[in-house]
Length: 250
Image 1 (cartoon, rainbow, N blue to C red):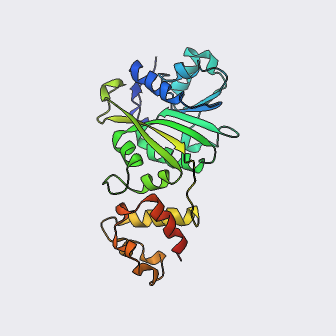
Image 2 (spheres, rainbow, N blue to C red):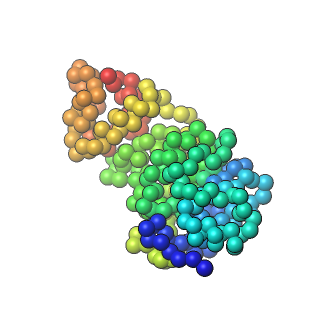
Image 3 (spheres, one colour):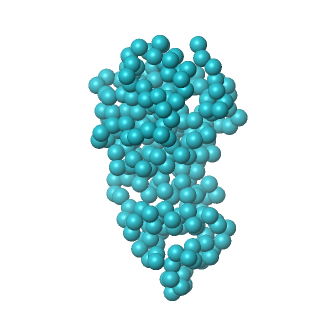
């Protein structure tokens, strides 16, 4: 069979009800190209390969799991990218959808890679540690609202779909999990530049207890910093507020 590797953050989903809920959420959207991230022992994969008329690929770093998947599901031949997701090039030309029970130790990095591909990602259904899922979905004013919330919500609508009990996995993780969906915003946000936006958001939350004026003072001229919005803390600003401020940066 196969072994579990703690170093890769492996917790394998065995709850068929949760597998079917993920597939149902995925199939609410039309897609022709699909990438599964971290298929592991194939809990979701066995459903994905039954979807007709799609170009399917899976990315898996673990040698043992790749061998297991090939032996168990021969139709996966030439469809597995045997690398870390963080190291691969964009897997398809044109639009594609992602799905996965993401390794928790790199889940935030996975999200930032998806942001790099945002022009081509038409949907993402992902399982995360609940705390990370809540941060991605959080709105301004909440303690969980932060850098990843703002950077993702600038480009995607986030839906917090459902939570998953630790007992749905082998071995059970010490934390709850949650599944979220990202879909591109219908109306894209207007920014001076993505670089300015990223720099501003990260600077604001780097000292989140301080007033914004003190946290981002190096990025604005003194007369701009007199505006009342700089009396707020970063967690009080909406994504739109951050976007508008990029036009006033140095």
